[in-house]
Length: 90
Image 1 (cartoon, rainbow, N blue to C red):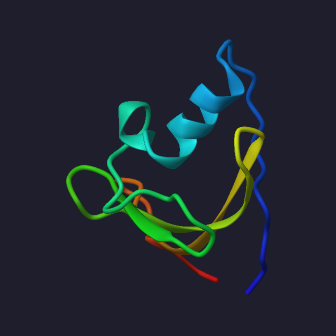
Image 2 (image 1 turned 135 degrees about the vertical axis):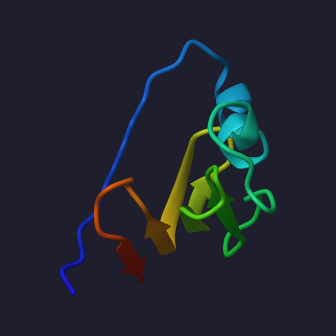
């Protein structure tokens, strides 16, 4: 399997503590609802998208509170309508 990395950095007008909270405990407010929050290193959460078939499972693999967060995708099933299924496993 060809492993590829994806990195995304965004700049927002918010206090670092507010942004950190948004990407650890408040993801459902800007993306989709995880089955649990990503708070501690090693935590895993599954993010499912309507109609409930496509999903990504991320592990909180690194962080420095109020500074940066690193998620690693450990499992995924991504379906684009009319396209073949894309599976990913770490």
